[in-house]
Length: 168
Length: 168
DNA sequence: CATGAAAGAACCCGAGA
DNA sequence: TCTCGGGTTCTTTCATG
Image (cartoon, rainbow over all chains, first blue to last red; front, side, top):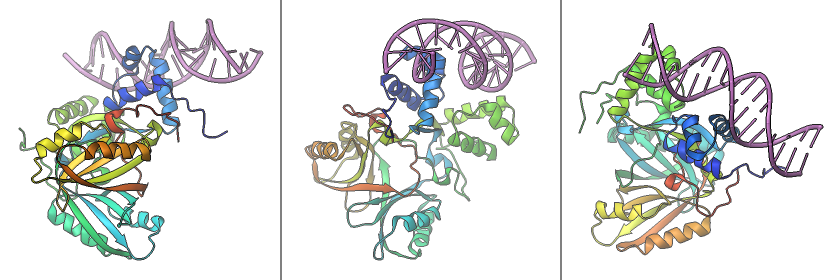
């Protein structure tokens, strides 16, 4: 009864591809491309959103333009057993953490952090390390990207509080 | 090429925030919210795109819905000096690599990889390890996410080749 | 600010359970 | 028949010169 037969055919896939390439294309245009009317496309998109396949539409912004110029991954080691629920709470206290997950290997969790600059990153790191059951952290700073950066916006989807956001 | 004096005020920031929350909102609606006419908003958006601040508009899709159910980070160690340019080339050969960067620390690069399942991931890993100057890799598998997953779509912005994409 | 285009709603059609 | 997808038309809203 659950685990639906999945209404997920080739047309849906093509629509998703089109919308991932450009979320602002019109339904009519997409329809013309895949051989469907605008209405049919819209209905499918609505269904895909309903089903949670499409979780949103977002503008992708170059983080450096918003003043986020420093990026790092932080492995987190906890005292004793680390209950993911508590970890999630901690993570939400720090808007500079843009992604966080539990992982295999020595560390309990891996965080992706964006900061204004190295000084800001240090401050964030200290804040994280004073959290109750964090035992130690190991940071890896990102030097340069080898692929065109995907979406993944800045922390809290805004500009760092005290930046002077230039372009670049 | 730019790094200009930066035309970047509060209104621009508000527009960006609005578009990051929902890339399909109308200019008129955004304008009403921040006290600008639709036309003015459009002009600013055009300018922000022109300047490379907004790099695109994309639909965010739950990767698992597309059949990407396995996610890992892979630290890459190279023979001798690793020229980022060559590394970038290698990285582009594997569509399952969704992000790649050079980093500080022991490893030369860090890759983010999405695969259909563990078997597929193993295959990708073997493919990567047979690349010319890759000396060793250390993989960390993602177990669960502690924050609502940001955009960051599946590899090659499509579905894995031989999946049976269900929902959920 | 005026004009053409897109979105959205109401309605109809046809195939298959 | 009833349902599920698709198409058609019409009105309102939007994009854009």
